[in-house]
Length: 132
Ligand SMILES: [Zn+2]
Image (cartoon, rainbow, N blue to C red; front, side, top):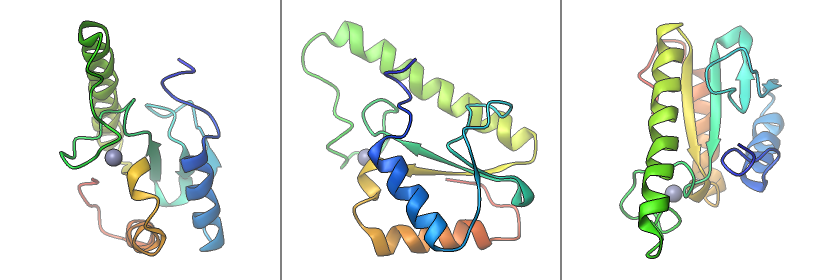
């Protein structure tokens, strides 16, 4: 699974640094939770996933990183769709256990100010929300 879910990838490190600089503390990769979320805020019952757009099929039509390769579609499509399906399943399991989640996509990380706002809104939110 190393290819699917890279540990300590650049986007993840950037989100970690940002969240840390905002004063939030978290645990990493809690395997007891569905999908072993990248950042876990246990006292808030919130988790953040940092997803690579390609491997996790960012469902945003304008995302260039998520483009399906033109060659070997028969190989890539089921593989990547499988990743996506697993993500959605993990997210509904988290919801069922009363955890809130946020997915930060690789392509969203460049806009640091905007990302900061999204992270702050998510982490400070007290009412349950529907996640992203
Ligand atoms: Zn993307």
